[in-house]
Image 1 (spheres, rainbow, N blue to C red):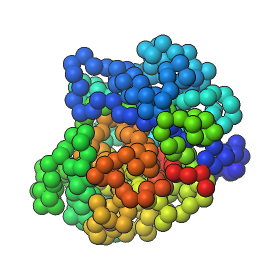
Image 2 (image 1 turned 30 degrees about the vertical axis):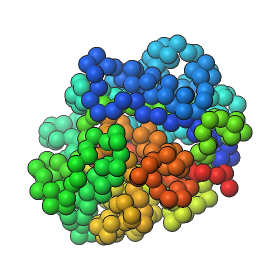
Image 3 (image 1 turned 45 degrees about the vertical axis):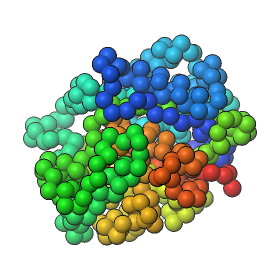
Image 4 (image 1 turned 45 degrees about the horizontal axis):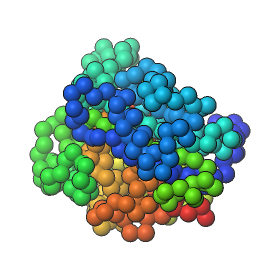
Amino acid sequence: MIDSHGARVAPFSRASVAVVGAAESDLGHCLPGTTPLDLMAQASTRALADAGLALQDVDAVFCATTQIRFATTALCDYLGIHPRVHDGTQMGGSSFMAHMAHACAALESGQCEVALMAYGSTQRSVSRAAASPREHNPYETPYQPMLPVSAYAMAAARHMHEFGTTREQLAHVAVAARQWAVMNPVAWEKEPLSLAQALSARMVSSPLSLRDCCLVTDGGGALILTRSERARHLAKPPVYVLGFAQELSHLSISNMPDLTTTAAKITGAQALQMAGVTPQAIDLAMLYDAFTINTLLFLEDLGFCQKGEGGPLVSSGAIAPGGSLPVNTNGGGLSYCHPGMYGLLLLIEAVRQIRGECGVRQIPHCELALAHGSGGVFSTQATVVLGAVPD
């Protein structure tokens, strides 16, 4: 196998690894004194129970958080385990798709038997600034931008300029997310949101209003992975890992090569090719919606529509309940939960939809799901394709 840079990488056998456990921690606003490690451990024990496994079965741990320098070491210490494999790769909200790829490599090569992926954040309790302190950037900090929202606002403004995208089309993304959230018992926002309400919300960084911006919540989650032959004998139906890819683009938004095209264009094509499917075969898209413009750009870059056609697609109702392409069925970062780095929760919802566990928001016959994570200001991108059956 050759990656996007022309380098040879180790092959991955499609569906050789499966997700066997998935769980959230408590979400929203946690009790005083709760730490990110508390949330990681809570989600981890729930995910192990979901899989029918025990803590002593875990011999690989993958985690990342902005609030702990040595996240993997700290979690292992907290849980009292000493795994053979540990990985604290930190690339923002796409970290967890990368962790899944790394876990697959470790499992398939026999380095471990059961892998735990975990995340936790108390950014609402301690404030976003304390949970994710902003680094000094010599190219941008002197101009005192309101980051990260102003970076995404630049991308939205450019998309409007190039393709005629409107604020109303962006608002449709927020409304669709809320329609899904009202069906999710653990979503933070459960009040219906009209298009007029979304459009009249307080402006934060033009053209993005409050309803174009993600929530600020506490929360976390965990996944358990093992090789497919073992997965078939555990408590829940296995959800197979079919494809994955990761790519970096830039650190600062001022260095983004094209404000309307992200590296999802690379990762989506690679992950779908590995999975052996096309975008049209995907039943569910879980897209990192820190801002409404994200959803538009990712729909385009991942191949669900042509560049510039994201606005008409979302305004048609395609991504809302009953639409042709369900997107962010848990309510997304816009209405369900956004605890700093949201990527792991995208994967959890994809797993639950494929297993048919989502109640009134369940998609009929959900067999293929794509989960896409984004880190920084469109800086890192990672895509995972999951499926119900290996064939």
